[in-house]
Image (tube, rainbow, N blue to C red; front, side):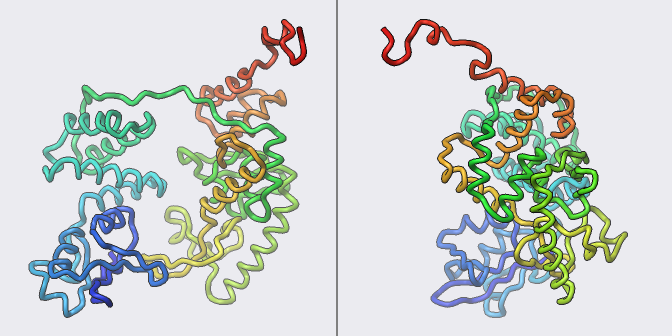
Length: 408
């Protein structure tokens, strides 16, 4: 566990070098007068007499490195010695052991932290169905959260109690449920898709083309590796998609030529990284131990790599991650605005548009289901509702009585 480092700074402030995690970030933001220094990559807080003690109390269970001048102000806190793992650490480790996605792991840890903070310091072992019910109800009544958010919180708390604490949870009564609205997906017309893509360029345009042309989810596109592209059979292999499922989807011909040129540039970059002793990427599950050199092989490289390297905390090795999804999200939003489209469309709208246009072209719903990776056809049926909206094939009564401009 990387320690939290606290040392004197300038102008009456303390420097806090804080290893990143959502929980630590939330905690440091509770301190009045804290300040983030982007260039130096550390926080500073007011150098008050009790601040070192407050920090060590705030980050209980963490490992600390305190400057010699500060150690006298902190009593009964073992410095540079690991403490037992906190409950949130156990949630994180349990999620990792079950190979949950990073986003699911962060969500579960976040909900566990919010739930425990609301219990007034009560021991987790003493909590149960009543406390869970009150917390979930407050999300609906006070937080006004969506039904999907409330369900995610419920799943996280069931995981906390049953998988981490080993406590069986029975029927949870009296929960005020958030209402699940019937919301149709936003769909762009073919002309609107063409207009948005026309305002994009480079890597982000290529990624957006795959979202629309292959029906990929945003993260599925970011996670593509070179070996997942099959130019000869015109198909893309989506590995560990939603629900940790693999699937095949189509490889649009419109993207193949630009992708070949893109991969040539990526391969040159990879060769330069190898010449500098770099060139490795993160490997799924335990493959890094099973195939020691595979992380530097061309086939395992990201199709859309990031422009910079990062340092892997556990091993200290420098690696290149895939392009962050927010890069594409920002580029798409800017292109949508520039093209004059007012629909509330995001990157996922391209996937909705892919499915809708497939059905408009006469492909059967089972084909669309498999290409999209839906577990059941009922999920894919939402796009038939989209097709039926807007009066397709039905003539409005207003168009039958001569209300057009100038008619008498």
